[in-house]
Length: 310
Image 1 (cartoon, rainbow, N blue to C red):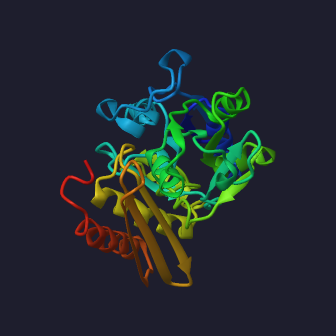
Image 2: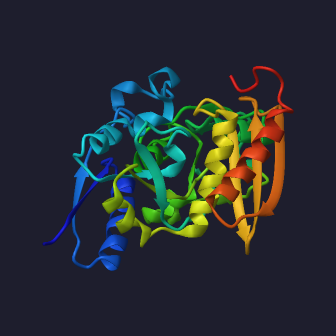
């Protein structure tokens, strides 16, 4: 009998493309599998009447992109949820896990503008749109004169706002632009010394019920081990720092053979105070990766002033 695997996703074009990536990988690994995709409206999805307001941490912060999908997983209405892993909180609801990820895309951020090729080319006091405090902090560290304003909506909506002159420039994830075929919109790519990526940027994560052996066995066949180790380390570091979408934190892990290097950054919202740390160590499994994330984050956290992460 043909089994059916139900995937829950947001309805944005990028979310659907990422879900199709998961579905295609599953079909290749399990040719007899029947796949159903269910689009779910989440409370984090931007609506025009909300204006350019950042996500409220009291309402769940970046977790608002997943709440309704997670409810559907727990209610057995879908078997998994597909997420941009950078948008997922460090701590998941009881009974849910993310054990599987796709191969990581380029985690860097991209610079888009109405004329400038680089951040340094922007005129004094230029307006840059981003709803990420990490991006805001890194921009202001480099260019304190810039005016940073929130910019909400899916990727095409943000680009439309940029092109209409609502802002002079915008910062978006390179991975999302590439998946949408919008590389032509990119003026430049921001290297890590200018803007360290968000934890798990460029990684597609798959959330399932913790006790769902059927889903677990299906997804094992498409899991990328290297991206999974990086995600484990970065998410553990974020959890130790207790980072929210209102805390400017960057985290990026790289593997060279069995050696992992993790870079962490925590900044003030205005970018004028920045703390950084970097640790390397052997990593053979998720437990090793999580330990590296924990050790690095604990060391960095010990250097932070009291209440710096609030």
